[in-house]
Length: 442
Figure 1 (cartoon, rainbow, N blue to C red):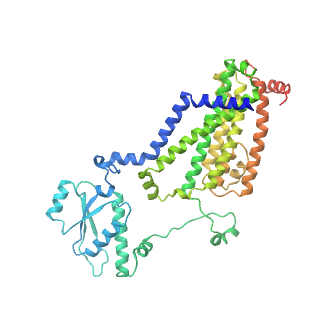
Figure 2: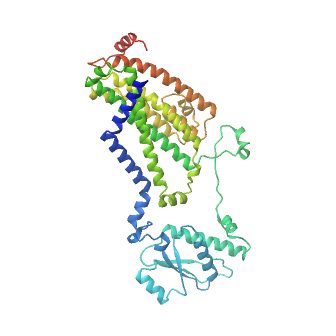
Figure 3: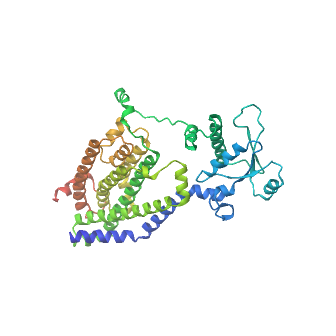
């Protein structure tokens, strides 16, 4: 056990300090940061961000000052101003003027203090609730956010005017103006449709769809990076003849499992770094505004998916890791490693693509069967868990098959590793490998 801990610690320190690992981690963290802040960076270049317009730090509303020409429609103008003030991050601020020819407004337009003005047309019909509205700008058309503010605010004013007076509160008016949302869900049989109203089944939210995507991508990239790291480590030690010295002090099995666990800890550290980068970026003010405007609430994250995702990641890692270690032990030159690990890489790619391409169809028979195949279950079963399509019995059965597969392939990899690390020259055939394996007991 002491020797196993020594191998684990040595492997962890050696891999965590390599320039390739540090540079790869920093580059990926930088790409994650750029990707998460790309909308904000684009808005800065367009002068629409929080720090746009010369980096003054003004809000979007302060950069969109619009004149409001009420005319005889002072009540509607008052309601529009009240609606705008009630917004947490309004798209514009209003400056009231008597008419469009007011000298102060003309000077403000000339100096760039106003980007345009909104004017209510004279009513053309008796009892018209909301007159036509005209937006006049000096140089460019209004942004979609300003148009949305106008339409929503005037719609609320229209509903209130048609119902009459202050009979309804602002919340009631907003509720009337809000379109009805229609959700849909699929059932496997007509008998389930009769219970649709009482079951209260929750549709997977967008935030959980995104979580499933991230976890599947994370498993694929991490398993490929760490797996190739294990195989290349074993092959390089074997090709440089260092392996002959190592096995005199540490048994081959201790070496194999020590490398697997050590590199597993390196992978966990890298994931922790990425998680810290993501959380830090999500806490930035402009990203929280984007999430709220998109209707995404991080409190909707499914902790069950996170828990099972961690379990499937650990088990899936060890399944692929023992295979990479076994393949690396039978390769004598690093130039041959890429071709040797190709079958394992294809299995990992298949698991990734089955999960990604079936995220819209998690109930097909193909996906259900793939969830019990150990090479595919880390991503496919995670997909079904994230979309709430897997029962607890199916999850535990998939986990049991995965654990049994790890034990079997771990035993097989140990026998291959025990014999392969001392076999030099051309890659051994299956017949030669089987004969050599029979000579050793695990």
